[in-house]
Image (tube, rainbow, N blue to C red; front, side, top):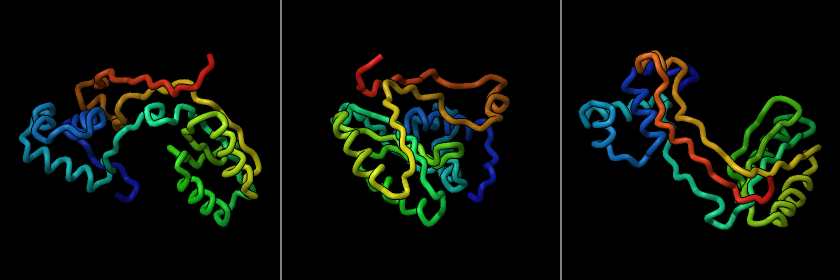
Length: 183
């Protein structure tokens, strides 16, 4: 899609809500939950993908369960902040196995990098060897993540009106401990 929002009706919104709660839901079950025929549901999901409302499906992996219990947000300032330096920096960060997400932001920090490491020593090595050793990194702050809560499914602003005047979510706000000690 080219930057404009898709026109979504209440059924589309219900499909988005259900798939965000369970992206592996069989089409037959999804159709039943949103009250349409399976063939119609399949067509709707295909359209939502085509217009960019659904961009893919992923598995959420628990960092602690795979030996990466230390999670942190790295606030990085790059100087000079130019495409010549920013593009290679982005490529470098995305290639690191510790990187969970990368956000290019406004304000005093140019990037926030969510990382997951096996130990505090691994985090320290990552910061020193992969970030502050780079000449374009002018400043870096490390923020340990103690816990994470997920919000409700992401729905369009007009979703409340589209589904009868109230926000629809199933209350599945999952608390995930990142495993870092502290309080």
